[in-house]
Length: 226
Image (cartoon, rainbow, N blue to C red; front, side, top):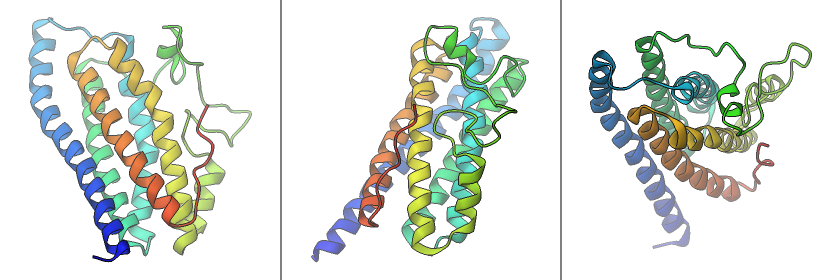
């Protein structure tokens, strides 16, 4: 077997494993949603600030991930990039819907009232991030692309698009990881913790895959979010 064929086979094996993690998460989440509804109705479990804040902020974070993945699926001419975009779009759309369903069940708004990631600050964790009206070209939360970066991505085509997409999506995944870890550590509802843990596992695998894909295309990751 040629070295290039072996590398392609290994890369797709890794992508397949990541997809399996996402599918397993979806199946477990469907069963867990039924348990969550029953628990909420009986009053056995009450969501805390970490449950609510994670669902609000991670759903918003996912919105941008889905938008970028959709661009990759529709516009890239690279079959690997298109498949990656499809997988991320499908997985994060399902997760986003589930989290917003929880918020409705908990009678909570879809957007935080005290600024993005304020639930993490209240636990002595990470600095609070929120939208700024003074600076319109800053990310809403760590790892998210700025408006100018998104506009730049939309203006690109071919290998240039593929490289920048991978750079933005790697950083996007990295930026969401602290929220996932915080939810695993602090959320009161078991399904919130389970979803956050599975997101972290799947996105860590995807970052590894995307980093290799980026290297193969002659690119390098952007500085990680702070």
